[in-house]
Length: 475
Image (tube, rainbow, N blue to C red; front, side, top):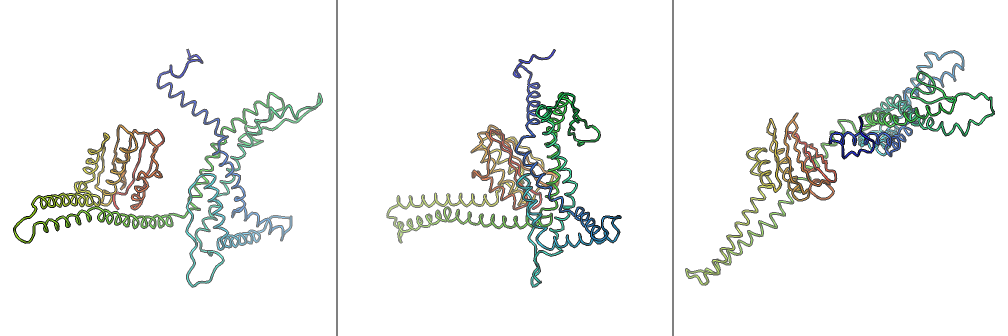
């Protein structure tokens, strides 16, 4: 026997509650998918991309063949081989002209803008065109522009993708038309008795004709058409999502900066970050030395000078208590200066790293105010620079968890795989970690980027928080 309809989910076992909630969430998402903003942006991207299908080498070649044939042979006969060769030459010259000028680059820039604004795809701009020093000034980058030829390659690949995008738009439009048949039937099918009316074609994934299509001639049949329309509407988001994902992949691969250019850009950025990080470290050391140890050492010298004046030039001590007090103050200042100098040296290179990253992270876990579960699996010891960055990342993340997370437990995982060091710090706190809030995460991301690393933050409001640092084993 099944459960009555009034049975609340609270009376179900935990597994049943999870399945009911999951089924409800999936069903609600499937029904709402055709009417979301994401669906609207993807549909608009498909419609906006249709004009780009015309700027295609294949389409241009067909148009050129037809034009040359009409101009030379009229409407009789078939295009001759000479017509085909002439059309190919015209299309080739047109493509060279597009690449030589800025037209191809502007076309690629427009398509990247559409992908960024409508699909949320982050596509970097290619490097600007380089001109030879002392050469003649072109009105564009020239026929050797690789970026322009990659735009032409994308336009060639856009033809089948654009046709599939048109088919995806047909899903959405056809589904809406089918859903309207029960309402439109009574409004437009008022006719005298005995009049014969043509059946209404129904849109299906196969079009208006072909296998699986049908026509309706009665009011009852319109409800079958509405059911087909509802099915097409439910399937439309997934078809559009698949084809736009393929188009975005092509845009990233062909209209982006390219692997070599992107690598050069990343190296330039890493070099700039390394220079800024070194300059910031030197400024921090100078400030700490000037505001801390230097002042204490100056006070120490002043106290020793005053004690010497109290002692006098001969063997008689005039005020032994004052001299003793000055010497005690100098001794305290010397100890404080030594402590600050040790702290500065520890900030440059922690002594705990002399025995390896495992012992250093274990010492940080032992000093944590929150219980820490540590798992360490690295087959090969990283280079000293990587160990130092991993150590300071762990220390900063533990300090952030202690200050902001209100967590009861922290888990640290350190593993190595394929020449990559993976460090993750997770807690069961309140979440909401944001680099813009000044919690030191932005500085960690900059320090990690110096060695081509990555910082990933997963911290939804309410928790839990998991921050993963990915570093190369060799710097």
